[in-house]
Image (cartoon, rainbow, N blue to C red):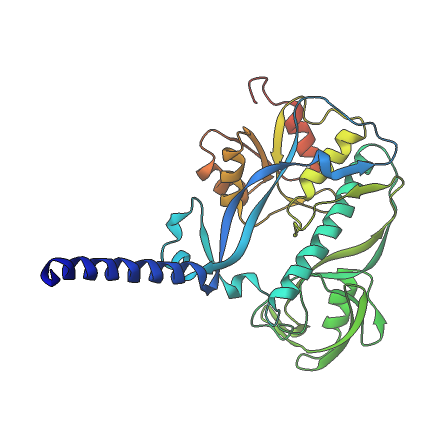
Length: 338
């Protein structure tokens, strides 16, 4: 009897050990992040424009998000268990010195800013005057090896340097370049709703050793006054990449036939001048559009469009540089696009 059941017992023990090992690999997070596709979501239910009528017309504008989380050890070893999975090192996702909670908070601030800019761009396209008052230099990116790394974070707004007011990126560059390389500058930074003092050492510009830099990429920050109330509720979705989709849908709500009765997916960071900037996760977003059955996808021109075409498989990729170009492209789509 023992001889009969011993091999069976060993087999069951081996299977149990394998199951426990796989379970642990699945549950224990690694130090690497993973990008995964999500389905496209209709924008219309998220937007309210004061005085605008509800629409029941066919078609609609869709935005595309991606799932971002820490990969399990199993996903780290075999990312191919998910379609479109992409492993991303922590250093590529978190700014130097930033924590996970700070990343989430920055994503939320980027989403709020994206919504306000999208509303302003759409209202201007509809003929409204939308005042925008410069309020500083918005930090978009911090070089990992720069003096500002760990001190300044994406979505920070620099409002003063060495006691001098900063109203634009040009003001920031002019003030930084005015000090000797190697000296320190005292900044006032708006981080969320709080003003924070930050001291950063300057270094010589590699292209001009007489000029000082701190290693940040900036864009204008502005206080926008909308002539009509626009409310956008995207829940816990963060980041700026839905800006183009939001602007298109707001304009649709204002009475413009933007989608021409078709389901249109769109991604791209919208800027106050109407230009459309590149976004991350374009592979996952293209797969999400494809899996949602949408056949037209507006994406930022350039590398984003080239990458999207690799995974389109029947989805029509429409590259755009600006909001105006997006409107023109949609107006000239062939009737066969669905």
